[in-house]
Amino acid sequence: MMTPFDGLLFFYILILALIPAALLGLLGRPVKHWAAVVNLLFLLLIFSSPRALLALGIFAAWETLLTVLFRGLWRTVKKRWTLWLAVALALVPLAAVKLSGLLGWGIGLLGISYMTFRALQVLIESYDGLIPALSLWEYGFFLLFFPSVSSGPIDRSRRFCADLACTRTREEYVRLLRGGVRRLFTGALYNFVFSKLIYTFVLEKLPDTWWGLLLYGVGYTLFLFFNFAGYSAMAVGTSHILGIAVPDNFNRPFLARDLKDFWARWHISLSTWLRDFVYTRFTMASLRQKWFKSKHTGSYLGYILTMLTMGIWHGFSWHYILYGVYHGLLMCLNDVLDTRWKAFKKMKKDKRWQPLLMALTFVLVSVGMLLFSGKLI
Amino acid sequence: MEETVMNVLAEAIGTEADQLDADLELFEEELLDSFGVISLLVGIEDALGVRIEPTEITREEISTPAKLIACVQARM
Image (tube, rainbow over all chains, first blue to last red; front, side):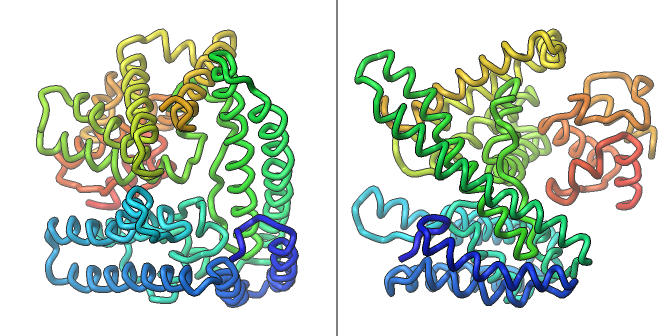
């Protein structure tokens, strides 16, 4: 089995596969047909063992069948319970894999967390009536798009399909190609140089003392950033060269002035997915149906629920759950400061205060990453 | 309709409608956040019966009061 964006062979085949895509784009021709061939080839390379291919096939067939049935049913029965049922069924494979990890059943599928979130988006937006048409080829391509199949970014189907439908002019493609190549190189530098250096010369050298642990939190935060932002940049860069403008996943997160700002800059595709499909929906329902006396109570519970979902999405482990609750509480505190302490908003805009706020945000994020690392519990 | 939308927006932000310029950048100026958008959408639904689903619109489509009004108008 080949690991995406790892090893010389992967990059050798990737470059060979991207050259025809770039040539087609530069001639102003559609890239999507070649992109589909490349996608199939890489899926076979990444999921090359019979076991992995079978797991991917069962998962894709399950989600596709569910989506086709749900979209068909929606035209005649637009009831809320049908959406809940479809969402629960779409989560079955993910729950099985996560439980399997916990109980040692030996069922696994690379990228299932990411693919499941893409499948859920299609179900929920179909219910909202936002996806009037979606062919099987579009759905399959979106669900199993290889650059982002294993670790995101989590694209949205309407954006993805709009890219499939359009043929870019030469000039438009040149811009996309330039950005794609830049992201591939930046991503490789982050992932193969900076993150490896931090791992080898910082994380592995720290002593087993309390201050060593504190430094580990800082080092691990930087390591995760270069590792994951680097991976994401390579995935986004590859997608762009294939004519699919998958959105960026990181935007200078260490310049964040508070936790809300941090989540708008870190693993953006996951945080915006959770914002749109967990936080907003829960909080909106609480306001519409007046579940609580104060409208802010719904929002605070929404933050806790959203961040808890984020934690559990990483895995059924106590340290992930704790990580989620920690960020949920910090988001509530952030909101209290935003709404109750007028000076806070002014401070965030004031250049003299910004370095301090950025440093404080970094410390809070590092404590979270220490929890996430599983070093504490 | 415009007045109603401006009142709902002002309430979501926690200010008065006459304080809001039509081209004010609501997200850049940090006047609206995720919760602000939710209050706004629920408020518009209550006041005008126009239901807008959370992912139906992008932040760019409602980034100023003028754009927001156009967005609601298109759905009436």
